[in-house]
Length: 361
Image (tube, rainbow, N blue to C red; front, side, top):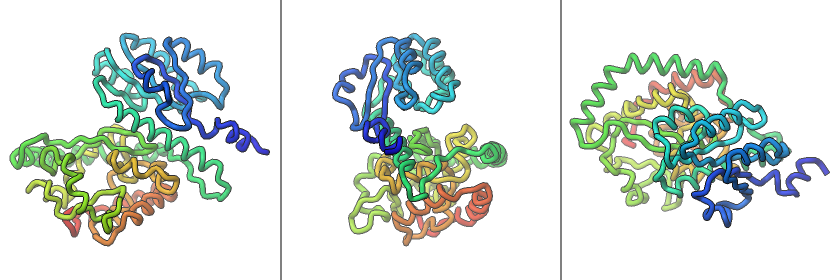
């Protein structure tokens, strides 16, 4: 019997471990928030630190959930130590801030942690984020057990790709600055509401980040989505789909239709690329309601690749009504498995003619 079989039988290999420092969520953790999780609770930060130091390698927590109060320096020292240690730097760290200044917390911890939640926040959002992390880690574990030779290697952004992203996005932002200013003015004149539409999206490894677009719909359009589910072109014959595409969407404003059909509404995502949330080329980051439907082994592998502004499905069949939900999923998986720097260049070149869609979607 090999080591992996032993570990699986002992339930360590397919169990996600949480190290929780705090008191606010003890009641939620009493019965366990999820199946296949092992939760270790700590009232003192030094006890959590000691636990990790003395913990066997295979039992080190895969997620740290840390409540932040007035002890910023202690938390910063602890998190920095976790990130500096090759054994623990891959741990997912989520901060729950209840007292400290928001701007200070962001400045100190944004480069060090995966997510920061500021009170008051919706506990359901936190549970969804943890579920994303768990599913992604379970996918990695399960793929390592496969003997079919088809396991995917988790994406690590090459330095050349990151440098290319920074250079190109910086140049494009400078060149497009007059357009950005003009579009902002026209959006404000066309309809009431903010110029920039910000939403939470799931990218590589189900990592959630703020995703930016020029607003092309009326205010509170998200709340109307459930009423339009029957118009979703991906959900054929009334079925369910992970993706949403509505032809001639009634929520779109007059000017919004123009910037969507010319993809001008996507320009603010250059800032997402510049700060590292996304790449120029990759799989489209998904709204959380879409991402939570792609957690099976067959489709969750799309999250093992980079999130991008443009990608394989956009240049292949974007704007064509015959593209099915399954075809789009398969194209995302193909990119994850086969992407390269040269493939990215080809996709970027093919993106230019694909910007002008044939349908109003």
